[in-house]
Length: 128
Ligand SMILES: C[S@@+](CC[C@H](N)C(=O)[O-])C[C@H]1O[C@@H](n2cnc3c(N)ncnc32)[C@H](O)[C@@H]1O
Image 1 (cartoon, rainbow, N blue to C red):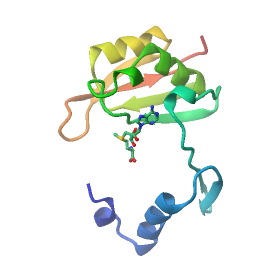
Image 2: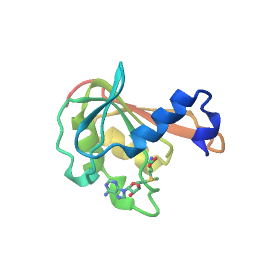
Image 3: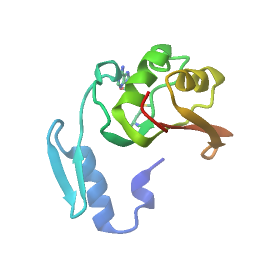
């Protein structure tokens, strides 16, 4: 999708460019209430604990990168989220759902975006 074409104000479009252009590894104040820190890091190396509210898990699909849709990776995502934190992904595969459940997530199937019948929402109800 060409996101720029759906942004109405010039200010929004400038902001869109800015979030892509800012450097990695340092915090940038994009607007009064929005700062951004972009980290260039492999999922495998994430060691954060209880810090994130939301993860948009947009890895390439399990057929291409099966190693990213495993219990090992979802455990890292689980640990990185705060309690009540949520991970969403476009995938609705049964094996993905089971891997998420195995590490402690409560998983729901939701209607997917256009072109996708279903997607998954995984919530960290409590720490394991
Ligand atoms: C479907 S794309 C997501 C694109 C992203 N949502 C965006 O808007 O730029 C998948 C991304 O995962 C990255 N990737 C591949 N292997 C990875 C890994 N082991 N850890 C973290 N990211 C990885 C790829 O470089 C690619 O940018």
